[in-house]
Length: 193
Image 1 (cartoon, helix red, strand yellow):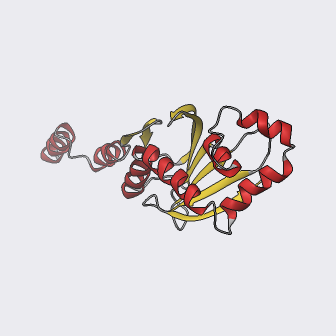
Image 2 (cartoon, one colour):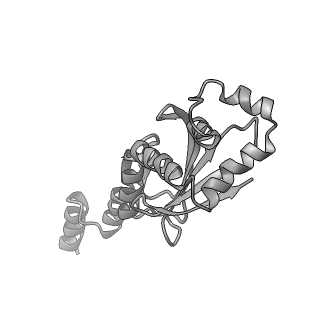
């Protein structure tokens, strides 16, 4: 009996107690990782995160990040990190794609035509007075279009990143919405109000 008691004390002293190892394992799984704009994110705590007043290519944007579930997959965090690290490049590419789609039928040309048709001429002229007047009205409006929000939902089936673009919140409630895949490529473009 005395020998069993001595062995139990030794096991306990040297960390061989199974209950104690379980506690240590749970502490080890609470790993945090640093994400651009957000700082430290715990992989053991999913949920909703938001930062505001972030400067991206001379735009002031809000960024929201929504993880479903309790735990965050490290691969998912890597994809989020890649998008956030490259968001300025992605934003410039999206604006170039808007320019490319300007003369084609679709959401982009529809968005700019709507603004030209619905905003009275005087208001539109005042709004565009500091743009290059040699450009078409659509391209002038494009030059005033700003990224306003980045939304990331990495647990969605296609790893959804949403970019919201607006000409002006004072002129219109309409938003040009760009959906990106997990590699930052454009999946689709829509208009929302």
